[in-house]
Amino acid sequence: MAKEHWIWRCDRTIPSDTGAGRAVLRELLGQLQAGHWAENDVFDIHLAAEEALVNAIKHGNRYAPDRRVRIRCRLADKLIRIEITDEGDGFDPSQIPNPTDRDRLETPGGRGVMLMKAFMSRVEYNARGNRVVLEKSRGKEDPAS
Image 1: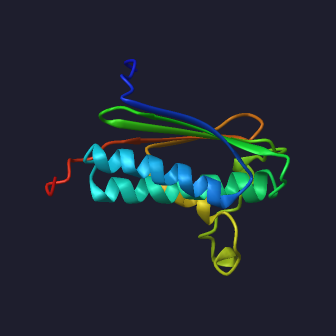
Image 2: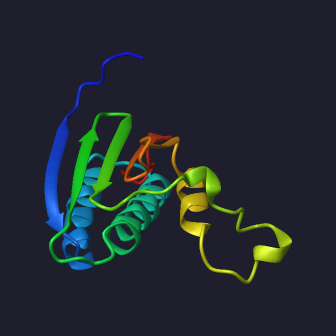
């Protein structure tokens, strides 16, 4: 894979607070909109990044005030990479039951990971399961821009 030319970078460490996560998310979405990314791509990235942030804060760090979440974003003309790391114990994503199985339709859990995989070009966890890398390749340009 060719080395990307990153036109915007962000590297933030936030407390285990969803409000702090939303502030970084707003900054990221603003960069996508300024770069005239298609509305459907922005929607996909918003949903996946928000889900990953909430998972890190809620499930990874369990809202612990002494734990932090690191968010690294890289934006190129045709690619966005978001890396989110929490200080929790991690998990094994292969052990998450399929939320679309008939016996799991009424059970919460697992839907966020499924949505991230559906909306992003790449979703990859580290071996410990406390870091996720989300990537989205840019679709067609928004004709309204």
